[in-house]
Length: 460
Ligand code: NDP
Image 1 (cartoon, rainbow, N blue to C red):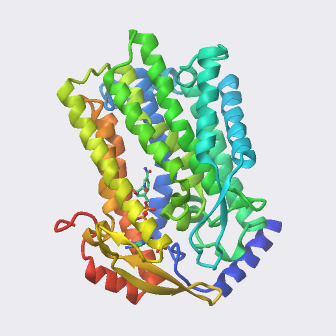
Image 2 (image 1 turned 90 degrees about the vertical axis):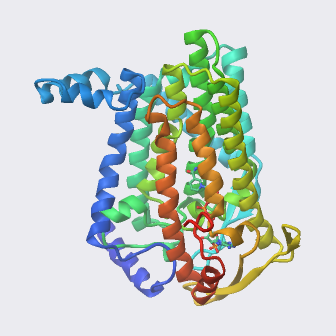
């Protein structure tokens, strides 16, 4: 009853706020069906890759072929599931929740710079605690000291408990999804920034609250995406590298290169955490299953598939292969960082800066928030942002490709990451353009006229 009353009250607020830019609120039947598909299929896909890696050395088709080639498909599937499904483990569950609490404590209590996000559709300019780099450093120092000096655990502890951790992460991911949904109705942090689509499924997937928080500064989005998700990324890789050392007596150059590429990406994220506050994750996405379960399960399990692969398949790159992958990866990183840096510089100097040796060309825009106030911003249309409207994604795709190429070309599974990133970023381009058209109107149309390409100049 209380939830229903609150839902009605919330819908009233929503109607008062009116239609502004920001996430869609009118969703079609097709969108709801796709949302249902994502809700059901993503956890199954994580499970499938887990089974492929654990039981079949990361051969993606092997579990499916085993069932397909048997006389009794159903019996074969049952046997496979009983044998291969991850098991609940009280120890792994304790490990996961201790990790989560440790990260929450670091986020809440470490000294932090205060950064600011983009103005929200309802007009808020929110402060964020920026202390990710320190949290990352302390977490890795504790992990290394506990494993190498104090002997509290093996460095391969994460790999050893991979199945049990998957169950624990799912428990938390689902809890967080439903908790966030309930919170949006009952005690929202910024009521006017909620979006109600009228579809339970869509709202559960894409979230209702824009910036759910506990207290003033414990931000769900920044915390869950950065830590435990991205801090865990490099630690998971190190754990798989340690397991490889125990298994074959050395760490392959492919594993070292993969660790290097991932660590560069992760450290860049934390070094530039203030910049991240003004990216689409924070400035556009609401907090639902997509981010709650995504940060708890999808990111740590799917983004580290290559290190699982390299543990099960020894890949020794030749010097030429190593150099090629290295060059592709770091060229991608250079593009990714330089493009993102140009946008940040031009915004922070209000366009009074040089881009590629010439004064920055910008479109000075204005936009209105749902509290009726008008704000000013600017769009850069020279430098990388004059080549295409999302040249930063080209850099990201090159790094992602290099990460996959560390695994050689024998199997498809390690290439899942680049396929996923390509789909994610192409879809993001569409979402972002819809949002920017809504936010900037004629100014965005002018930008589209000046910079007609979305991703690759003269191609797309
Ligand atoms: P962007 O950093 O490109 O941000 C897009 C926003 O920037 C727009 O919504 C608009 O927001 C503003 N903007 C657009 N055009 C201009 C312009 N010409 N001048 C100034 N501002 C402009 O996109 P993302 O947030 O998607 O990505 C950030 C980085 O993170 C990228 O490098 C991407 O590749 C990476 N990424 C990585 C992912 C991963 O899982 N590994 C997932 C997603 C992204 P406004 O005007 O409102 O500020």
